[in-house]
Image 1 (tube, rainbow, N blue to C red):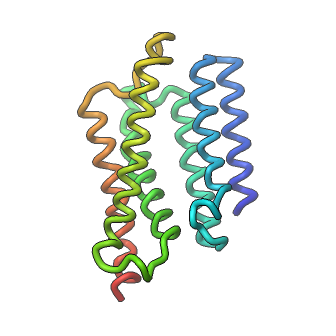
Image 2 (image 1 turned 180 degrees about the horizontal axis):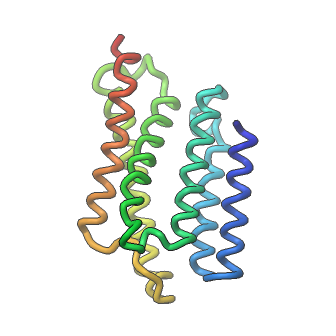
Length: 182
């Protein structure tokens, strides 16, 4: 699975280079930034993740999520009204990924009861807020300077994104409920 994750990372970088040289330099740089984000999962020890098959699977899922986002950005699908719905499953998957990753990272014995909900939900929320800040910074710098479509069209869009991040994290909590409480 690690090899597949590395192939995914290389694919993201190749897409970023293609967009940079063939389409739009700033958009290529933004995609390259998401590619760099996918390398954070290589630092497992520093992120409290012990090597395991489950961790490998979630690393691959995280890279696949970044790759899907790269393709959606690269083709401009977030700004196409017919495909704007793609934002919802991406945020659901991102919240779910963040929550599951947090549950893998922290010792289950230390975080019983309510803490089992707070940690994955908190990590999903933190990732969602960080992403919305990233979009806001992009909208008010690069995207404005180069007259690209905005990532955050309205406050409603931003709030819906955060809601779906939290719902993804909550879904992972409930999917894992029997394991934690049983």
